[in-house]
Image (cartoon, rainbow, N blue to C red; front, side, top):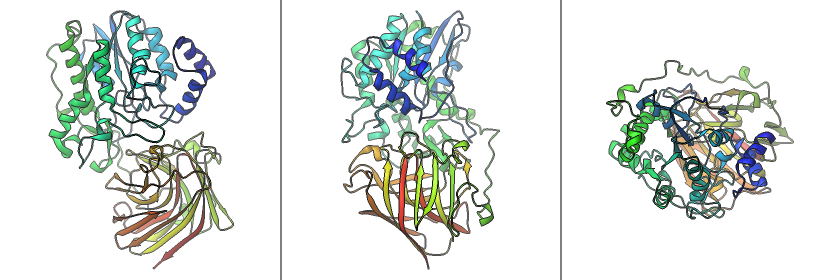
Length: 525
């Protein structure tokens, strides 16, 4: 890592990022999805199209029913391979700022040459309210820390200095089932106490006009297309973690969706650039839904209901309470590492953490596509009503939108299992979207039919260290009343699709949360 930092700093001579800012950015980037770095590009004849960007452009290797495909993976399908080669350097989870710390950026700097193209596809993560990734969409291209400045200084000027041709792409919309395509779905964000919100696609369009750089407006294109197709049509554009539509990933495209967007990008570029048009294959056509086929290696998961004989060998608990870590929790090797995950009974209390107790290393998530959590639970007959309550005392919680802790009742449970396809239904008296600040994060939420449903808090402050929060979940038939401090919500949920006999109720932590639970009571009627 130190070698990478030194090499990266050499690239940034005269730029605005400081050594300390880069070090912090690198440390924070280690929390996002790891992908294999591209450290060299073969010196071959012909033009190259370099692609930088986030997960909507990057490559993946998924076991999903409809795996994720970034736009950059499909561009070559429409281009003559004897004339041009696509070099996809895009990386999942990165912003235009955090990408600068990656080996892929160093490879871009040393490899791009005269006559090449650089497709720039950032935006999804620049709006993240996290210091390592956030850039301000409101500033000018000369203003350090702005989205425009990041794109201009580090990508447009780089390409132009090498006599290559930069192309800006606005981000695709996030799929918004049952909702209007506005606000965060089209990358127009609100202010938080620490980060200024704004219109990210607009910033890109303006930057294109200011610099004379072509802009491919993927935001406007996908907004119009998705509004026309509706929920039933757009679900066919996106990755599915499992074999049911409820498992859809509303951010990432599948092979069909990525192909449609790649076709849009190359045809827009060809319309504006006659030289680029000569690089296309003859008689290309917009792809059809016929190319969407399920992953032949996908295996439909078979669920086995929990029995005490299946209890964890890692977490020692007092029956009928059990401990486990499962889902998209950062890797199998982390389960047995007490520095990463811990569930400990102490004098009638339960102390749990996901990620290191100092919050510097994260593990697990609550996200649109998957969940990963530590869970201290009991197994309860599905037909029984009950009340679960506890007091949570926060020891440490990081301001990150995937951090969570509280009480949960869910359809299924898995024992010490890494599986990033877990997306089962549950209700939670817990926090979420903590990076959004006071009055914007969620204090009660549920995943129903695979989709997260959240309730915004009523002006509660960020749960800092020492904060005590009263929690409860009351089950009455299929109705669950969940309470987190001052806030309550009612969710109607059967929670019996996966496991028809039982529900699983307990305490949980996710990502970078270190919590002590006391006054734990479970009253079954």
